[in-house]
Image 1: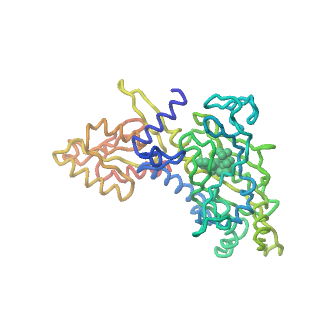
Image 2: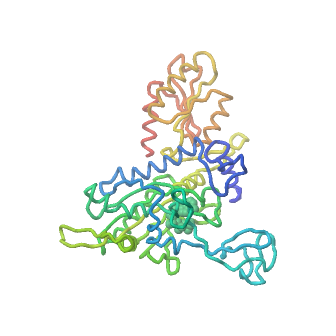
Image 3: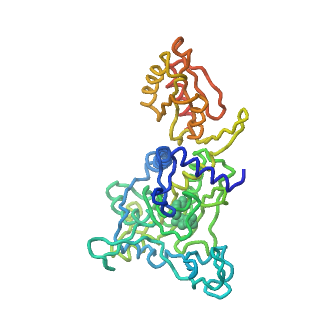
Length: 446
Ligand code: ATP
């Protein structure tokens, strides 16, 4: 299967099955903004729940937070985003398209007569690069002047830094401890694309871990290990995950060390999560700009210090895309192509389908009773329309790991078949045993 065609097939499956739709599609769409449909919202929610469980519920040393998207504009001065969150941009005077100055498709040097527009091919039509801030701006209150400018946050992390003392004091945590948050972020990306990989509105799952200076390198290594095993726990193909270390010029000015978790997408190895040792840059800057002391008092050592921060920053949409790409496969079954999303059962939007073989002979009644029983425990889907083979295929495309079918034997001997998505093997199971049969298999795979 050609790599580009895999992305095209995935985009089409996502629309067909209700995972992801283009935003405002009836108006022609909005550039690099996407909406999650009934199955997509479940899949992404499962990713976020799994992250929240691993980071907040399963640990004593991390607290949750949900900070607002709008923040005091000084936050973005302190963070460096007003001055530095920029990309160099060039315009084509001829066709009015806009590119990043370092776009490899541009031949020659933008601003010079030899430079050629990659879209219309005109020479000398590209402007000199100018810096473009990626933050979305809007105005707070009725007057649209510079004093009223606020930004849509380009990352969730700043909401954590400015609340660090509030959380510390109200939760009675001690260093080392962390704050975790899931929320929307916005970036006016110049060259977005690759479906939901790089979008202008997205969700981040970020955790900032506050440590004593000098212990940061050790915590950094621990977090690297924990975060990589979390990605493995999603069932992603291990050979398609790797570390990428930021070195030299790639390293942000504030970072002491940075590693990305990368996945091998059809369009190349790309970052899905970043782990950064940020030192005391963030708290130091907020202390300076706000004039408020943000030091921690270590009672045991009777000393004050500004904690260092180890950050883990993942994109919920990117991880969702990674799961979809990793799960997509096509198989030949009896001369037909079967499309399967081999999603890990823990993240699958629907855990089981329930089907009466035909709409008569008491089968729908039995299937409905079983469906009502199962849905108390799992997300289920009831389907009685079309040939049973087509119903199985629809569930295969949705990534549903099990399918329970009520057939002619069921009314006679109170048994059903349970079909396994990956092997297509069918087991005969007593109706009363179905909930425990499924829950055992689902929990074994957690
Ligand atoms: P990139 O180099 O891909 O632009 P970045 O280094 O700017 O990413 P960070 O600022 O470290 O990314 O953001 C942390 C995570 O947030 C990324 O690993 C990614 O999963 C997610 N993310 C960042 N920008 C976007 C975007 N435009 N669309 C979707 N997810 C994003």
